[in-house]
Image 1 (cartoon, one colour):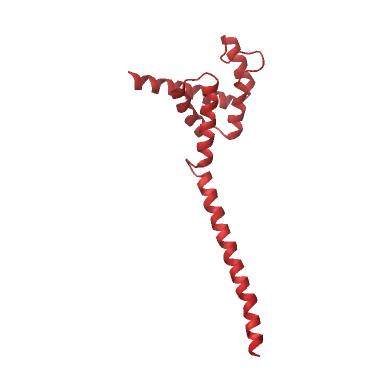
Image 2 (cartoon, one colour; image 1 turned 45 degrees about the vertical axis):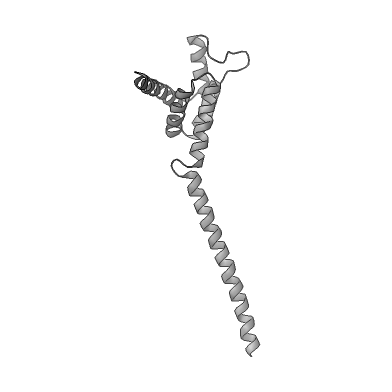
Length: 135
């Protein structure tokens, strides 16, 4: 009879260990998600850096791109940021639009008025901010 009690405790001990491992895994996953998704988390930082890099690659001065990247990430969704990629020059186009008409055509490709508005207001706000810093 003593051996029966020992065998009954073993599955309970294994179940308790398994439950503890599962709970630890859940806590680690939750902490990882918080680290990535929180405000100023890893996801937002990487996205802001990508926006800044794309702006610089398309002719924007680095200080302006840094300012605009942060603002755009705060104001737009990932889907809207992806739509702004349509501003990039297509085959045969110059890196920077050579006329107002070409610039308007590129803005029309975005097909998202809210994203274009955020882009314009970010550019204006950053331009004013950078001018204030200079003078």
